[in-house]
Length: 199
Length: 293
Image (cartoon, rainbow over the protein chains, first blue to last red):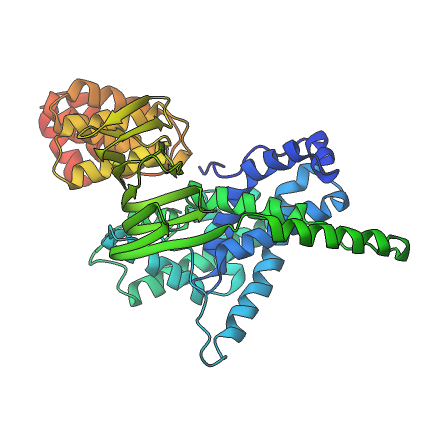
């Protein structure tokens, strides 16, 4: 059984109204709750060439600016996820274009490395990220939501705006493909197949 | 090489988990963008806007020059922040200064600070666990998975830890501020174990982490490691009770590992009935059956 653990409580309509009207405290409350979630999404879904903080900044600014257009407070998380997807699409495109500009230094992800190298875990995390990067967007999203963030199939389907059955079959295919790529990339040790999924 | 999917997931989560400093930086930046005035669409405001721009330009020209510099180096690097503040660092952070007031947000690694005394310099060093205020001194702030350690060479600094502890340090004194988040305590426990610290010290860090608010994956890792550490300390009764409580829940992360630990502990305690109930493999079932006989 999966458990929701990375999504903060949904903001109340009153909080959203206040934030949308420019109330600084309400805005800070939204940032406190949602900035970590949005930044995590941008890091895991954006890939290594996207500057996750830049993308998350654009998501938060877009969301706060468009808050008055949000119709259902109960669907705030799906709304935020939708904005994140659209912003990331633009940032990935920009990163791709930059890669073709001579002399342009590509963006780097928010560095997890430091002088105190956490070699093995960093390598594994980087390999998982590299494999996710090679997957199509729908596979990447379902793996991140269900396997890294431990959401239920139903919760992931709600965020993605697809039927639960679609989410389940997509997750199954994504896991199968991930496992093949994990083995090819040397992520799996002998007798210990690596798959992100637990089921 | 990592050899199971829980380790792979755990490593990926760790990679994607944003630091507190990154979140704080992001929130500040987004708030600043939202606070920027938007261009007026009405011509009638043009004169007012021009006046505002002129006033802003005047204020801009008169303001103290604030500079923000990123600090990032794997080997010792020096930086003269102002005439009276010198930094030597190996790690990463960010320094903001207007000459008289400087603030360093230090994220990871070692930061060595020298401040000329009695020159009215106001310097604050912030890490996720500690705030260090100083006027005229020499000291070092080292941040790693264990926490933030402050060592004073000369002068006096005031240290305030995120957990509420405060102190004034004089030459030769040091103070360590422990992580204030459960994930930080988990990292401290891992670093202690990797550094060869005793299991008792590791257990203290794990227990401290479990007393803090934690996301489900972090709580699961803390709990699983606590059970393993209790077992390593020979405190099988506590390990068995902790494993039993953990397995009664519906947490999936590290479940197989905790089941194996609980089985091993039950066998060591001669609790054959529990071992039989926990046996998942044929080998475990055979061992438990032999125990029952």
